[in-house]
Length: 543
Picture 1 (cartoon, rainbow, N blue to C red):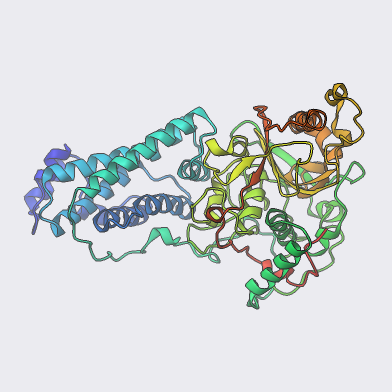
Picture 2: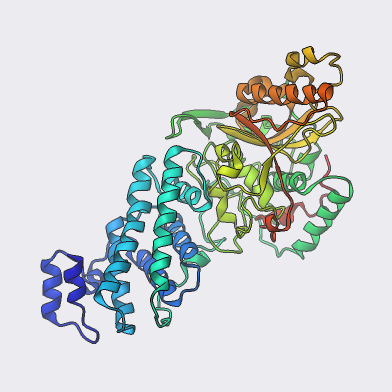
């Protein structure tokens, strides 16, 4: 059918008889699309137009523009585009390209069409079918994961290879053509720039019922840089600082940082209900059943009386733990991370999951997870907790597993990951694994987490669903079996090193402790956070 379509193409005009043949073949023409276009067709056509323009211009951004265009569509349209609609839009744009480039043969057009069709089928048919995607939010997360290089499952590794191969073939095909770079078509424009503006989306809950007048941020970079320099000069590092900056912004409060880390005495939050299971069958869905109860018992907001001008009223719309929840962003290069708008495939409550918090902490500190990749807010959708367990295999090339010896061990700023959870280490004591009391090598196997001396920063269903929190490790680990078992093995190897002088890089399969490289190719201009100006009055980011 495609061969017939290309042969029906005329460089200067298309007769009514040609339109009739198109219709008889069951192909929707541009004229028909104008009359009765499917929902979201204009947005699909924008993606197709930008993709074909990039093919002609050979600007080496074809892959980025297509990814961002699809992500923006899913974010804006709240629906999954049909593969057939996307292919048809691409065919029509190729027709326009051919009119501007008569040197293109029918064989050239067929080759381009074939390469694009395979790519669309992989992204919009095979990928969602393979992970049983049920919503645009789930597809957004899946496509983002494939984009960054996630290979944490057999299927994602397979899709990674297939999609990269398709892009490679397309790029190779494009390089063989000598094309005229077309004038950008009218429409909504460059989808890669993120046509959703940061302020145009509807908040995820109706809870911000006490809107406060927006205020301009007075030189936010100076304020941020001041706090960063203060933190670094006091011996902190960028990962820890990023975690604290994200934490304080989430609670819109300097006071939240000063509270002691949670422990077994910290009371549970009341008023949060589990209302079902996440579509993956693992996590639970949580909603606020009683706002007054949450306000009076949530550890980080119960004592907050008021918020400053321009701050988000967190008491009115509490951030709780939301499995699958991600911070809001657009695909624009300068999009901020917004913790106060609902996103991801969690529930409608405000709140983010563990990987959402870790990414936010790294990004706002200017720490790339993948060497050389532009640091963008939208990558918060990409990396799940499982990606961090084997970072080098999953595209997180800026992270390495730590080694332990008699003189080196876990540090503040390290990331700990198991399949299902990831967290940051905020503080460590002089002896984080408690090995100083061990007298013989044989006793290393008896080390348990009750001797540990460090604090974790995380977003978790702790204390009934609080969400983002600081927790004493010795108190937290008994309620997280996988974390407890894995970290006790790290303690064991650190203890062995004390007696035999060796260095170990534990590879235990189920848990990893990883550290950011801090090399130039792993650094980038930081991503800003929405409403971060609210914490400019903090005296410091220390705890």
